[in-house]
Length: 125
Image 1 (cartoon, one colour):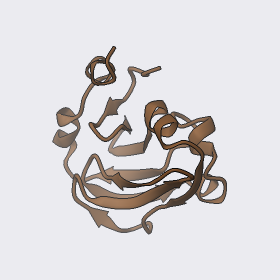
Image 2 (cartoon, helix red, strand yellow):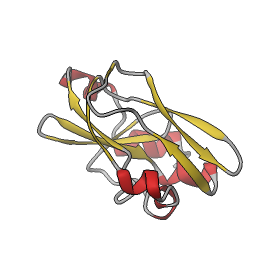
Image 3 (cartoon, helix red, strand yellow):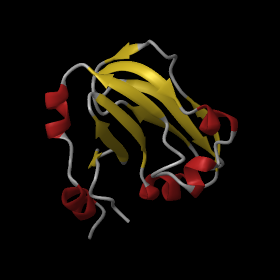
Image 4 (tube, rainbow, N blue to C red):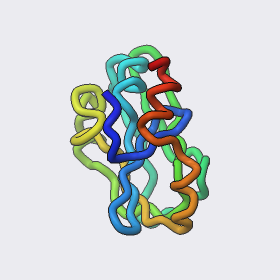
């Protein structure tokens, strides 16, 4: 399922824009590929990153995957529920399993991301 209210990256992250804040998580596809997620490392609130920077890791029983920031900006929130219960990323990656929120420093970067249709094609749909 690919909700059309958000943008997507080649690395299977989703971005939901509300005003000048981007909520970021990993897609159903990514959560499924990783398998049972056992640990999530997220950046400190107040940290600033550029688009494409590595900002954390997601560790599953199968692998460790880097988390890349799809848009530049300042980290304004992290999902403590996911830090405490990483399996939330598996059970609800598109809603309760969100990872972090970023105050956008360059809103034009959002236009470089894929829409739902393009992401669906990437998945082979």
